[in-house]
Length: 138
Image (cartoon, rainbow, N blue to C red; front, side):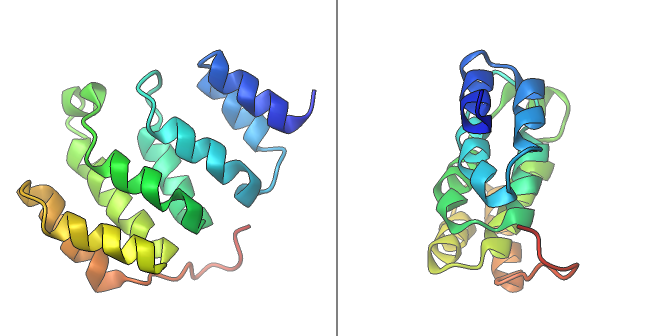
């Protein structure tokens, strides 16, 4: 089975562990669209790990998913008191992407009625664009 098929099968079977295994066998940029897709799903508890990874990758095509995830309420994150930490990671991932679209997403967050999202959007704008400093991550 090709790795793309393995990633698709993992998503279809809602198996986050199998997805991480398949992702390890492809380039980060090749796996980014799959991570972006799963970032918006509620069947797993890996949202913080996924958005952190997407921020490291810095793939502009994932901007929409990250922006949408930032304003999505995942119940387990509320239960674990991690929702704001996740939202902040989304803002930093957008800053890391450094595209005009990611800047627009941060500007929208900065104007959000939720004071936490507004704060994180402004913080992301202060750091936009945020280069990855430890070398190429592709």
